[in-house]
Amino acid sequence: MNTSSKIAVLGMIALSFAFSGKVTAQTMKEKTVMVGGAPMYPSKNIIENAVNSKDHKTLVAAVKAAGLVETLQGAGPFTVLAPTDAAFAKLPKGTVETLVKPENKEMLTKILTYHVLAGKYSAKDIWATVKAGNGKSMMKTVEGEGLTFWTKGKDLYIQDAKGNSAKVTIADVNQSNGVIHVIDTVLMP
Image (cartoon, rainbow, N blue to C red):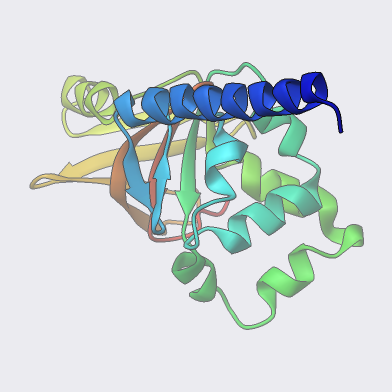
């Protein structure tokens, strides 16, 4: 390797270190929220963040099986009510395995889109609608049916069409294309 080639290689290495330093500095400036042991970066989209949460492996697998990855990487904005793996584990045995089968894609899509609101709604926004609704607020999901939001003390809850309630355990996980609120129960249309 001649001298000019060595200088070019060293220059490229130095440039890559400089660039990675800027990326690290940029991501360090972002206000992240820890979910499933991983920082969620507001500059990343819903999918880019969700795949790093070890508490959302089932949700990510279901989103992939339903073919919704591209949608949730889109511009949005979306508000995603994200059930944890523990929430999916509360479902009857075999439910998740059955839903991710190709022949059940339509039902899986219906359930997943029932966890998505069109638009970006912070916890503060939802609390305001609950207050304005005298303790309850109905919000329409992307799936088409509504969810009822209500509060108890300092906690925000969601009731599905079947009467099941989910508690928001981590609110306001901002994304480049919306916001995620982590919930402890899978909602059913």
